[in-house]
Image (tube, rainbow, N blue to C red; front, side):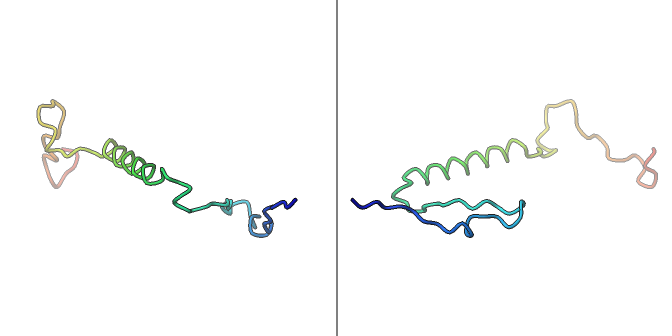
Length: 81
């Protein structure tokens, strides 16, 4: 009976310092990951939604609101007035 086993060098997967990134074995064969495109699309869509939610609105789009900027400075040479 033949037994197949994976053999990996421990030097490839050990970190030199604690701040190094941990390397993980990964198979990038698209046949093994059929939902990868859908997953990447969903991530990109969520990132765009979050970016849109956290964006600051333009001042011109605040029509109808009572809060807003009415004057930047009364006296351009003195900021206290």
